[in-house]
Amino acid sequence: MAGASSALQSKRAIGKATRDAFGRALEALGGDYPNVVVVDADVSNSTRTEWFGKKFPDRFFNIGIAESNLVGIAGGLASCGKTPVIASFAAFILCNAYDQLRMAVAYPKLNVKVVGSHAGISIGEDGASQMGIEDVSLACSLPGFVVVVTADEASTRAATKAILDYQGPVYLRTGRPDVPKVYTDEQAPFTIGKANVLREGSDVSIIAYGLMVASALDAADELAGKGIEARVIDMHTIKPLDREAVLAAARETGAIVVAEEHLAHGGLGSVVAMAIAEAQPVPIRYVNLNDSFGESGSPEALLEKYGLTASRVVEAAEAAVLAKKA
Amino acid sequence: MPANLEELKQRAKAIRIEILKSTTEAGSGHPSSSMSAAEVVTALYFGGFMNYDPKQPHWPDRDRFILSKGHAAPVLYAAMAEAGYFPKDQLMTLRKLGSPLEGHPNMKRLPGIEASTGSLGQGLSIGVGHALAARVDGKSYHTYVMTGDGELGQGQIWEAAASAAKYKLENLTCIVDRNHFQQTGAAEDVLNMDPIDGKFAAFGWHTQVINGNDMNEVVTALERVRAVKGQPTCIVSLTHKGQGMLKLLEKLGDTNFHGKPMKPQDLDEAIAEVEASA
Image (tube, rainbow over all chains, first blue to last red):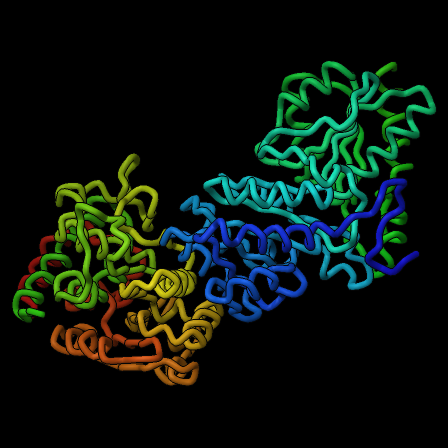
């Protein structure tokens, strides 16, 4: 293993962490987006907004360790026509400042980009207190918010530009470790609310976001060896959900697996289940953190222990296919 | 700057009467928390301190007023109606379905409202955001934020105070409506935050303590703010909750009167007391 941040077993080439890709993209886009201002709660060297701050010091404010104030200030800046980007650990910005996100951003529907880094158990050794594992659920519960989780470096670059072009509140989740490349450096299609079908298949659909997309692709390879053809969907936008892609998956493959580095409740699994239960009920299986906090350990060991691996996706897919036949 | 004191006093009275009428018509609301702030809000809107244009509520160079104590919305609505943001008769739609005059201010429904408030402790941070935006854009507008005194129990207020001092926001003024009561009792008993001016001063703010129900002191304090450079200003505005109807509140046996409208049968007496006040 090449160090704690080198991630995650995959046959794919390892790219940069999504937080790095976000930080570089923000820095690169800063010149073209003069309304962008960054407010930081003293974690810019973790969230990578420091690169923007160094290049555009007049548009960068470090207001200290105070997420509630951070979100309120962002609401004020957005009211004055700025496009504030605020980043902190996913656990802190969503959990500590939830009322502020509700009142100062969501309720007036302001153009604030909220970025939660260090999401999921894949941050590793720092342990449960630092791991955002409920952020997607909380962000989805903010009326009017768009919720995005990217799978790799290239898609994060594309998503960063897309959310700056979008008018309205957005939550973007990023991660700490370097992750496998899902897209080529040049080509990462990204439209808010439009899922990417990465692999076609007719037996089962694996719907995933974040680092579970690479695991889903690995799982699909393994499933093919067992005669099961899996469709793999990168559901990078959890809200608004691409219902068309979900319903097509249910209709055309008859079985669904949802894989996410998140608690069971309120995550993509819940959202997909709601959509298909209403319109196209088919067997569905879940790969997620169920109902538990993480702990300290290497990212690989944690993903293994908590069942966020390609082999668990394979098992879930087989179970879903079996349920379809029952 | 005119600040005809007599005229301002009369406007404050008119605003108090609108507060009473609109909350009684609504059958709910916070008239006493609104009436304590009538002089300050009147002076800001009509004393020549704020540049605004009711015809262009989103004019980028306007001065801003953020009512962090959102439950006092009736005082803001009454001032805005007086200023011409909407017709005065609309005040009687307060809190009714379909009205932009919601129970707490909603910036998406009522142009001229600068922040949606009602969850206490957040307005000063939003004001810091406005003040920072002015700096980034090289604009000279001023942002005024009014908080309650009980609201100072929210830690976010002090996060905002520290950040405003760090960035030397001389274009930001926080006015604490120190009316001495919060929901269940005296602010000092629920959570004593004295000395309020001392706390803001310790964070690096210029501070003033005034009688906030004395129009002369209010106007003088707001004039002084303009001379302050390199730091934000906090005005601790000592007021009475329900100012203008204190005798009636005493008679009713409730000097706090939090979150209650005047009953229709007492409304005339309340208005008469306001009219008779100095």
